[in-house]
Image (cartoon, rainbow, N blue to C red; front, side, top):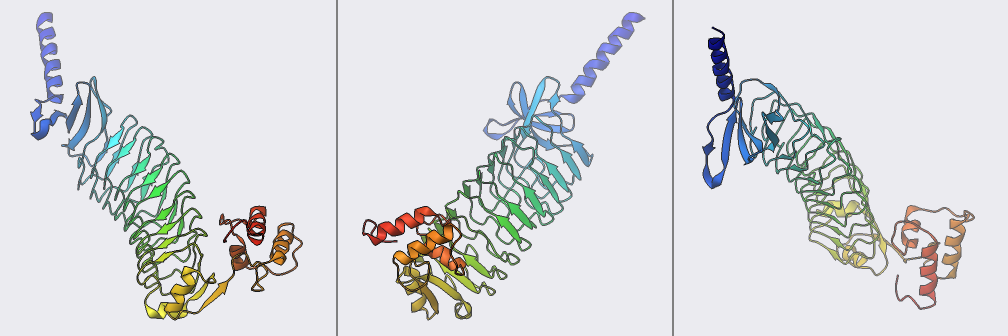
Length: 386
């Protein structure tokens, strides 16, 4: 009798194991999938798999880390696309989340990315309309925020980007509900369309090292009233601030070279702009239409490209002489003395923002002794132009 019970126990154990494992299915391009319980998995090698598809009926799940001695290392492309899940927990140990992995999973409200994830694919969490919490605070292995990753997540109001991230790709936050974003200074490049159509965005801090604000970056961000552009920016792309209808003033960075086409098109609240003399190209209809041009107060440097640009478009400008700190229309030793007095807090006159801008001849957005030295060098002829 005991031997019979042992045999029955052995049979039951085999049946239980076989109920978890299924026969491998070979698909095109040598993709191999294996079913473990409620999960169809993409086989990576003999010891690891990725979640390929959820076959179960539960609506609140925690993804598995192991199937026996098989390790789960990530989530395949489109694995949970348009799923009806209400919640999903991604465990530590997963290293990748594929393209479109949770695209259109409209019932999920929160996602936390574990520290081990180093790769998140294109549109991985796009069109998750109820997603109101996306936690990247622990994602210490992540270096890139992918294209359209959170596109159209209209319930998402804020996001914390970890300092490990060095690049943010095109359209990552496009048409999302973001209201406030701080991009850390570790980020060296941002993609076009980044905040396209983010109509609730009011506050954004850009990283100090970027050299370009790419095209369509803030297109249609109708709630934003002001933005600090880093001094490192040399190019602002086409339509970058197109129809930012609440933007009322803009201070362009001191070493800017290129303004693209229709950068400030239809920015109906824009009243003031300072354009540095480093700008050598302004694209078609940059400050159009005509009623916007008429309402603008423009400060620029005399005989600069910008001065000529606005003159040809019948826009009144106030032209300043670069380095003319005391605003007497001449650049001479009196300006050197006035700046030195300002730096040691003995200058008795009022100092405006525009005075600080035109005296910042080193264009580092910081008036200091280096500016004094450069003006002195210019006055004695060792520096040709400012």
